[in-house]
Length: 358
Ligand code: NAD
Ligand code: WQD
Image 1 (cartoon, rainbow, N blue to C red):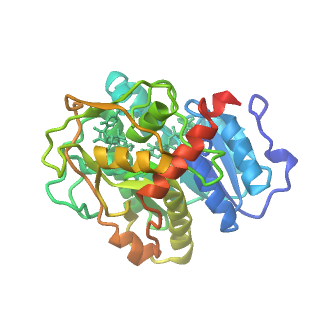
Image 2 (image 1 turned 60 degrees about the vertical axis):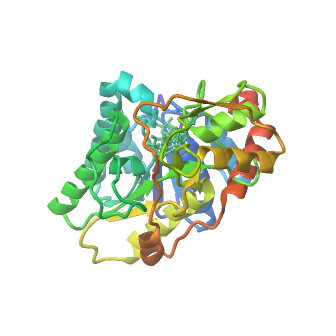
C-alpha cells in the first residue's frame, strides 16, 4: 500500500477489527470514541475529502490509543482488497459519503458515483472476503415529505425526495435489501439519522464544515464566534408552533452510541430475516427559533437573525418515532437540546477555525 498513509502496520493487529469508512468525519470521529469505550478495535479508511486527519489525531488523544488510519477511497477496489487482506476485518461501519444537499443538485453524477457506486464497490469487496456485517449511515431524508408524524420505519420511503443526495441514500438502502434477499447470511443495519448536532464533551472534536455551513447548528455557532454576521431563518410561515421549520435534533454522542448498540445487535442475533432498519432521533421536534433560544441560553451569546424566504426542498416538520431502536437495541437518546447546544458551543468557542486553527 505504497501511496497510502498507513500506520496500521506499526501496530499489532487485534484478532478482529471493524473497518470504519469515513471515520475522520463528523459522526465517524465521535463514533470511534464510543467504539473504543465498548472495547471494539477498529481501522479507519477516509479520503479526507471533507475532513482532516487532525480529527483522528485528536480522537487518539481522547482515547489515549493509536488509531490505524488509511487515507484512501472506498471506490479504490485494489486498496480495499489490500485492507481486507492485511487485516482481519469482522464488520464495516460505513459513514463515507458526500452529504451536501445543494451540491448534490449541482453535481448529481459525483454524488451517485461516490455514494452509490462507492458503497456497491465496498460491498463487493466485503463479499469477496466473506465479511458480511454492515452498519450503514442512512438518513431521515429517505422518507421524503411524510404525511404522518412521528415517522415510523415502516412508512413509505423513496417518494418525494427532493435531491440526489437523499436519493443516493434511498438507492443504497434498496441495494442492501436486495443483497440480503440474495444471501440471508448478511447482517445489515440501516440507521436513519435525523439531525445530528453537538460535539464530544472535551470540545476537542466537532463539526467542521468547509465554507459557509448548510446546516443550522454550525451556522448558529459560526454566527456566535463572529465568523458570520447573522442567521437567515428559512421561512417563517410554516404550519408549525412558531412558523419556522421543525426537526428532530439528536446529540452526536447519542448517535455515536447507537452504532455500538447496532453492532452488538448484529453480533448477538444469528437469525435475522431482514436488514435491521431503525430511526435514530429523540422523538422530539424543535423549531429553528427554539434552537436559537436554546443556543443563546447555553452560550450567553445573542444570535442576530432575520426571517427570509423558505429554502427550496425544505419540509415544514419531521421528527422520529424512536421506539423501535429502544425495543430492539435498548438504545435511546439521553441528551437534550441544552446539552446539544452547550457542547456545540464548547467545540466552536475552543476551535473558532475548526481543525484549521491548529
Ligand atoms: P462528514 O462529511 O463529516 O463525514 C463523511 C466522511 O467520509 C468524510 O470524512 C469524508 O472525507 C469521507 N468520504 C467521503 N467520500 C469518501 C470516499 N469516497 N472514500 C473515503 N472516504 C470518503 O459527514 P457526517 O456528517 O459525519 O456524515 C457521515 C455519514 O452520515 C454520511 O454518509 C452522511 O450522509 C450520513 N448522514 C449525515 C447526517 C448529518 O446531518 N450529518 C444525517 C444523516 C446521514
Ligand atoms: C434544519 C432547519 C432549515 C440553515 C439536512 C439534510 C438531511 C440531513 C440533515 C444528511 C430547517 C433551517 C437551516 C440555515 C435555517 N443530512 N435552517 N437557516 O434540512 O433538516 O436536513 O441535514 O442526511 O438530509 O437535508 O437540516 O440543518 O439544514 O436545517 O433556517 O442557515 O433549519 O430550513 O428548517 P435539514 P438543516
